[in-house]
Length: 316
Image 1: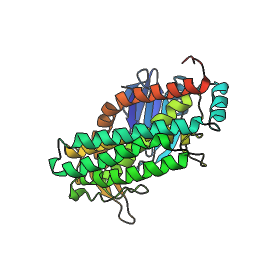
Image 2 (image 1 turned 135 degrees about the vertical axis):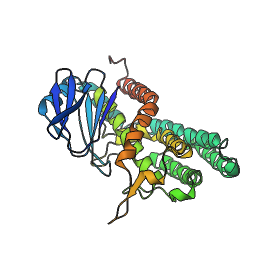
Image 3 (image 1 turned 90 degrees about the vertical axis):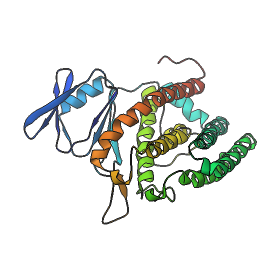
């Protein structure tokens, strides 16, 4: 158990030796051992005693806080982070060199290749879309071949944007019309597919932020995504290559009918679609199973980037 999800309104958390104890309505309702944990995801209105926070910080266990209904990211708590100031200095130096262009080409190339692979793999289950899937994959592959000629990150963004537009037009066709997935909508998501994409992208993004901060890099200074106040641009860089992996996961759970429209709720007063609380119980273990291998890749990607920036070996 590397991740503990706490998603029940009104819980009260206390430290009990080497465990977190859960209380509700004045009585104890269970506990979870601390030793196996690497992260804790807290959803909604939950009370946490400070000794719990202190212990998790001491053990370098991250806490991610999401809002109750919309699962919007609210904040993150870390323990001691890597204190390698030289590594951050190297990062700041590199962002002003040709490294930014080189690294941008690498991550976009990885993303486009993953998009093409996903479309080809979908043909086996959607023979009726063979032509659309093949054509979109071909366009993406042609775009990927032009990346090395790009002289600026703006050119790369233009190429990526064009390929992704065609990709999503075909990706949308993979889902049944009953889900009403017409386009990518984010704030707020307006249908079940967008709701699931947004949730998975959010969780993945802060998985990456956690690893970036733990190794000592600055998550706000990216190479492909330029600095924007309040944005973890370096995390956006690294996440970019994993977006097609999220897309594959989301398509699979709908194609296998693990989740359907009835698992989602719609806002009454304003647009918005969100995974119901009872359905989140089924989602968390599925996400954890999927995320196990992705987390290993993220760690390796962050470490590889740190080595390249530092120009020498780093002790992890």
